[in-house]
Image: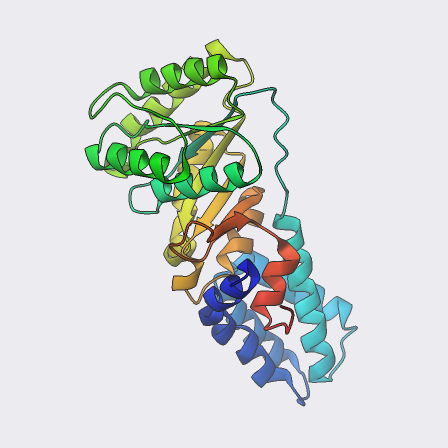
Length: 304
């Protein structure tokens, strides 16, 4: 099955919540102020966020030139949403001579380690050499899980075991990756949010240690978010962005939520690009965010 088909299947709950209800509200109908209010409510329920929902409705009004024909307004709304999705897309080119360091952050339970494994598989498919760093030393299970992913995708894993100093692990991984001429180093980190201040200090220490090895490292800091968390993820983005200056978002478990609009809502609220989206458990179910593909899947396009 193609990734588009998996994405379309994964977004079925959001499509049921948003696209089909929009069609039911507007198709063959006359549009008035109350209709626009209902449309705004549908966007908010799909987790676009209040500010983004309001902006989309205002732009839809302008684009449809106050048309009262529901079909015209529906087409204008979908075009505006596509434009907003496009604004979230920013493909990441790996320009560092190597290793390009990607630091993966996020709270426990969002799928950080699995996302790292899938990222490694993706880069291997693109012909790049990959190394993994087991920096989540707080949980022994995380280290073992990353080692299993390393075996699965044929990528070496640098680890020191539970309770080792995370910055030390990632320091050693960088040195090893540079010595071996590795293209991409992907580093896991702890996510114990209940000790938030300690966690953030640990992450800052990792950044300082990497900066001494390479002034441009880490080249990316991506926050992994569970889409089923919806707008509750706002505080996670704010906390990690304040501490680490994020360079992008990876949004997982879109197949488990009716609120896929969170992709747009969070990206626009914080001015952060969506780098990757995930719609399943398979190794190929994480891919770079493609706005046109996402829009087609969201609006039940017949494209294959």
